[in-house]
Image 1 (cartoon, one colour):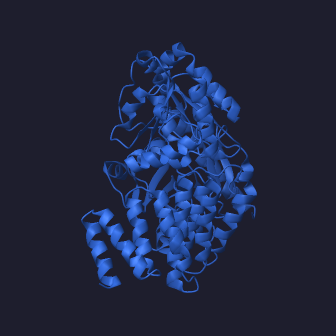
Image 2 (cartoon, helix red, strand yellow):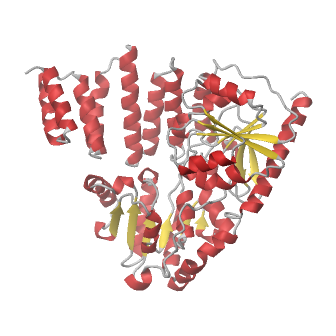
Image 3 (cartoon, one colour):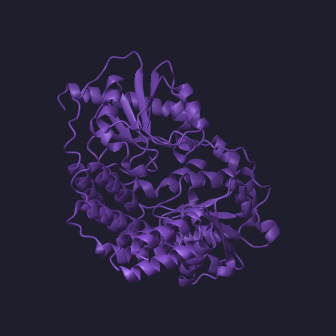
Length: 527
């Protein structure tokens, strides 16, 4: 039987979900034809399906040097492999090497089609936010690469309008039940219609009832998915948008950034849906707040700082918190983190292990999609064991429909660093669970600080790993406080700037008026 027939058999076994048989056939192919690249790629995809990143990485590592990057098609596949290897490295805790691998993938595609390059480079910039000690200069190198590939874009000349109402355009791929809408619902639906008109530019593929509800509030709704970047920008220009607000940044492969590079609106800003600077000259402002902004050297945009919170949390489910923290019935403290596994750095795991050691009989619940399979649990468990964890004190849970209910099993939530939780932190607090958070200098590391300070729990946000451990241990020793917080945290949130939509809208509307006038005056002065 020849290689092609064997490969067809492997495909059939894969369709039947007989993965072991498919892998055995691929092993035969690799013996018969060691340089048959499709076999290694197919093998890697099967290991990905089986949630075994180490085996997937092994197959990709053998495959990568087999590509001749002087050939355009092979260069493209090599970039895919490097990008995937980078993502795997990030997932297992190798943050800087993972980011660098994704960056190398982008560099392979420096020539057209530029969308492939910018998608990969946006992924590298996104991944850089999870790398500790990544400096403004480190970010700037990535931004400079990105700007090179906007050189073909001819921006519209700056133009201001004299509309009776300020036209605000929101551009995003996430106008559905998503963390972005959980944080921006008040903004997307509540601007004063006496002074503002709202236009939505949607380039996403997922739609639901939230999408339909947003359409109701729109003065203009534009589906731009499938349009070229230039044509999408033309639509925005034709709508004479005064302020274009990009809600995605470098998420989703930076799918809206080249549109913004055409500068179709009078004033352009980013924020809410992405934790850091876009690094692009086409954006005038980045939305933050006085607490979260941090070191402004990390921004290429001017930072627009709201007095309180730059986000306004909207819970999607009305589920009541448990009456008591679980320590009351368990007679031990349970810590928890419902953050993505890729956010869990080596340093954070070391801290968590020390916290468990310092709190006798305590447990730790980890919950995310990566923990939803036996193989995923095994791989994560091996990593945890290497840091000294007693796996008998760890529970790993996969995704469930009503994950908020499971906060009833958690006494104290532990935030990740430097890629901190956002909506995850809000959800924990909303369910009566206090969160201990570590913050740094850059905006993306300070969400926990901003959220906790706005709620009135700023003492749970600290600036050193030692203090993070100490604070978690102290809180674990005060069960009376845990009971009080379980009872009162939701009310504290509802009364805080974090959920005060009226005050939030007043502050952001004032900010919109200010930046539009600021840019008009700057332009008329010849700036």
